[in-house]
Length: 370
Image 1 (cartoon, helix red, strand yellow):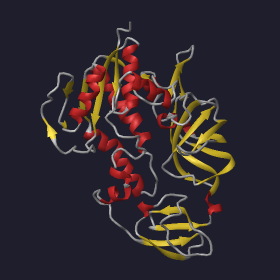
Image 2 (tube, rainbow, N blue to C red):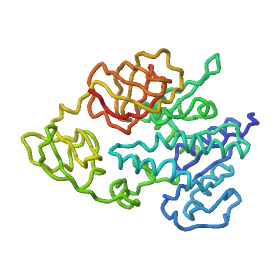
Image 3 (cartoon, one colour):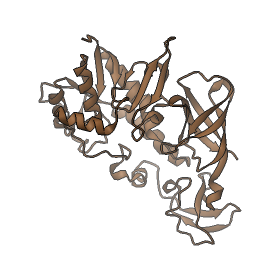
Image 4 (tube, rainbow, N blue to C red):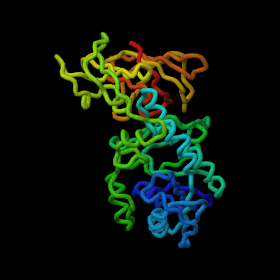
């Protein structure tokens, strides 16, 4: 029997629900944490009391969270604490997302949310609840070596592996994390959860950004203060104007749809220039680059040398490519040199370094070089 308390971040989906069930079955004393971002459906309707023996309200929350989390709590027979994190979520996830688009980048908000919120703020909250660790439904694995260092590894299910998204979490915080699903595959989890009588309150498995309704990020951005349609020129690499765009926020590197300019060949977005409000387009071949710069590096494992080899993923869907990593001052920046030129290396996305199945660290792509 495990007498220590483990907090579990529960969303209402089957993954976090089953993760909590596994821990309880293994003898952990489990408490749930469900956080309110303010972007939930019905999130504008506050509720000052919680009519449930299982739920604890720490601040204003949205009415729709009550029946959903009560359903989860009753299945698990564990208390769930509803936490209002609207201000922190806005400041640390949503605002950087908006500012990235304003500066011509294409952000990945999950890579900011995990270190700042899920394995930052929620770890702090877990400690106040007497929990020694925080569990989630992420499909990743961790292990400690003989020296006590924490290693982050890919999840067993190659279709669900989420190690890319956790690359910016510090090794200290990963050491307090528990991932019960890391050694399992999704189909196995769905089957076993059904046999255990567990049912989620989330419909389907959305791949959209959690704070953007229906995945329409363009409409979301235009509703933000100071964000407006700003038409400008579409130019080729030599500066020739071939059309007009309605706003740079509607484009990302490598995009073809939406350019709507006739030409001698299909146009792809090659560069986004917020300082001139120009969208640069050209041939697909021009998207390839053999190197890029990376900033804000987070190392889960200390880099072996100032110059070393690894496999780098430049976006979540990227299979990864071998590269040479040359570290800059204080190992906080790097230049990557790929063995094979890569297409659409996109500023704002995460560059994540792997040695086999292990994540060494990651950083933010600032720009491609040549």
